[in-house]
Image 1 (cartoon, one colour):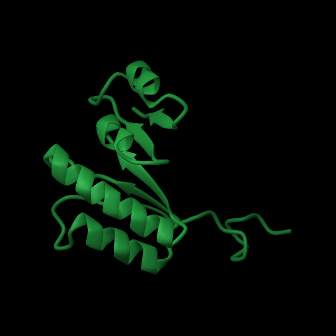
Image 2 (cartoon, rainbow, N blue to C red; image 1 turned 90 degrees about the vertical axis):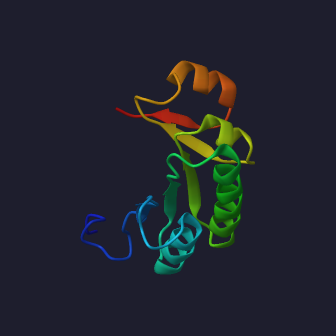
Length: 113
């Protein structure tokens, strides 16, 4: 059997991140990534007001679920807590990892950097 990086039938999922500053909204990015075959999308909506972030995240999660794509919420435990069955990832300048884990309960919360 070929290693997964050589076997096109057993390749790892395409993982993508949305980003600010593109000519497409975060929701347009999510839709385009889903249609392009992404299997894992990390929604990064930095510096957005909380209400806008939450609205965007809710729609992104619905879109991802419709395409059987994992949706990760970046940098906001508050937004992740406002959604059902989402995960959250934090980096060094975000909320304390232990406190975030306590707030998320059994939900997934990972830390980086």
